[in-house]
Length: 163
Image 1 (tube, rainbow, N blue to C red):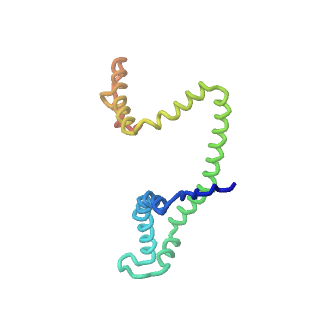
Image 2 (cartoon, helix red, strand yellow; image 1 turned 60 degrees about the vertical axis):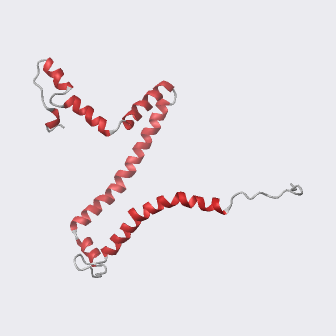
Image 3 (cartoon, one colour; image 1 turned 30 degrees about the vertical axis):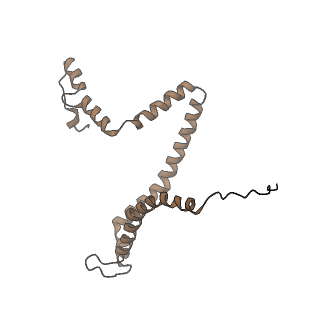
């Protein structure tokens, strides 16, 4: 395609547009820098210092930690958990998702009910759930009112071992 004579190609983005994105990225980057990167670097620096004198001690702190049997046990348990439980959890979750997909892909009504039943608890704030449980299970709550009306003694369910 030839350009017509007399028409200049428009400049799409100027210098102002190129730096505008930086203004949007800067607050997030500043938050990561202040709350994650600087504390992490401080912890790394302190790991090479003595606890009381702030003198450089090299790898002595790491030798002490790796010689600790409790640390080795915890690290071994973590590695075992990652090697066994995580793949098993991912496989079972994937299998359950595929099974549910097969069950609910045929019927739109069952799928809509399942989706609602799954997502409603996520939308209810935790504080309102706590208040609802208190209304039901408190010493003067709904459950004790029903039990008392049926002739059973009421129990403060919130202060039992079951709670």
